[in-house]
Length: 214
Image (cartoon, rainbow, N blue to C red; front, side, top):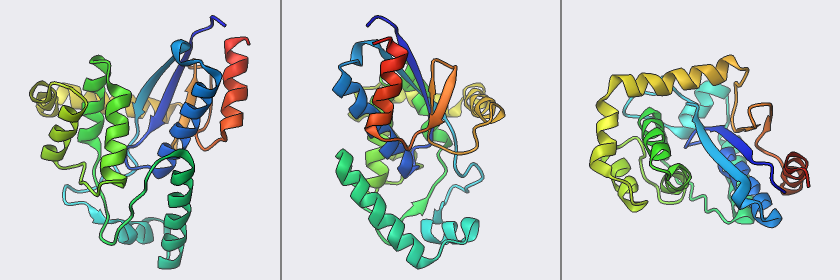
């Protein structure tokens, strides 16, 4: 088993299905013992690129955007909580949870990629938002999460004031959209094939086994 596998995960840090998809993928990689041949890179996608700085109540946002009813929301949150438990992730939904702008988070994930800690920061942001009731559009919160994974927070925060860096993230996002991605999570293997990230562990294992030539 020598074939290296590059996996791009196109996702947003406030996408609950992105968490489930990644945890299942991670489980498949671990079960196959393929950690040494897998390279994961997180790619930016904003579910709500026009979200204002103050955010919007999530239930109100989903009702406005998709027509989601309160009953739909209650049912969905219960489903995600149960799925999270299956993969070892805690969803702590609460009344007043806001949809937030995630551009700053994506810029810092780009910084973390260059520092070799992108997956660590991504997981930290997932947990901060969904498990710890934190506003991950707040720059002070983001700074704390950078520190928590051992990143140089002061240096990283400078990226948020760099228009070239911010535009680069937006360009990357647009490139994935132009490639046909309109929803997340999307898992891209070796820049050759892609599947929706909401697959089972067994499906991931089958794909990875084939790609590795096992």
